[in-house]
Image: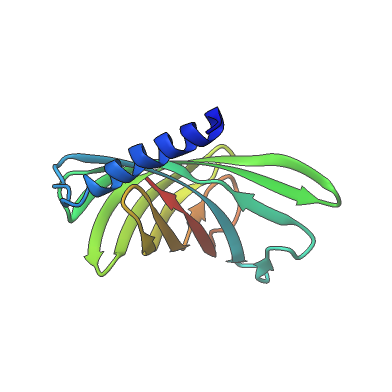
Length: 171
């Protein structure tokens, strides 16, 4: 038997024993820290002007990355950081950076509400209610969909309301 076959058999045996040994459910202790990363797409933004749709002359995408600190199974605190990239006429650049702290409230059945304050490097500020749903839950990670509804003010611009779509992985 060659060395590669022995190594494969040994690794298979070790991983099989590890899987069999992990049948007992783990207890969750609080506070609990989790992290996540995702992609957010603004769909439409409303202001005093006509609605602006993403992909209509430009495309904007964000990459939210955050840390959640759950105090209990129902309430927590979250810090999110979101760089946004905007592409117009073949030129891409980072257009904005968002600091997004907030509170988390578990609603049951995989739904979580996040109420976030918003502070942008563009000079805008406001708040963002977010409805989040876990769609796949694994032992060490979960996949989620979310709908953020950013409301922004400031920087001598009219107030805006945006509807977005977000998906990501939490771990």
